[in-house]
Image 1 (spheres, rainbow, N blue to C red):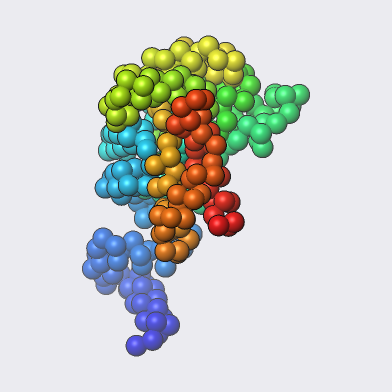
Image 2: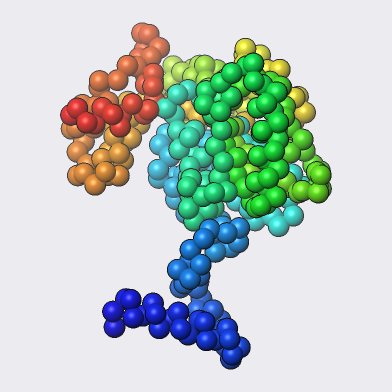
Length: 326
């Protein structure tokens, strides 16, 4: 039977069953097929388990196999997101602050979280992204930005309690603007009639990148494997850096009010990690992964610090464009 006829037949069954109340075909379906049909029959994304369903195993696989060179971040993100999504009555929103140099995978990690919660991933209407340079570029308009941000957060969480907010370039944001977010991260049951406890807030920042790099370099100089680095080796220096570096976080109440659940460090990437990034990008493009090509791309990048030249200055950020010229 042709797909169109199958669709029409199912449509008739669906509509007539609703009219006569004889049976509910959803009860005859389970798992994947139930969700698939509901999406076909009602393709409009909605705030329910059809479109929002946490895939713990999927996130575990992605963090372990797709997030390159970030064993600490993979472990912290998996445990915190899994614990939060498994709790039907969290006391506050989940707040993660991801820190590290450019190109180390912070944006990619946020994307993996979204892809394993929302069927539409980053394209979901319940995932909201704000970047300092794009959304809050003029300091003279800061009061307008505050009002807009307040309204957008309230409106979006009112529409879906499982909303996700991603703030990129936090180090460039005005501290007053950052503090606009503060009330929504507290332990309130409701704020102006809206509960924010099931929302997720992810902050992305380059702040603390130098302290993370220095710790990683110290391990390398001592002849120790970078996988020996633990969260405890970085968390204190990272939070201190966020306090002391000249950026919006330094003057914000988010840190001194302890509203961030975890400061998640992203380690600088080495040559071998860049090679893995190139191979992954080739595979994503449908190309045959070629180690020789990957090594050629990796060798073209700039590495620091001098004289060691261990870490890619731009991480894996520029490899996508470089592949076009190989």
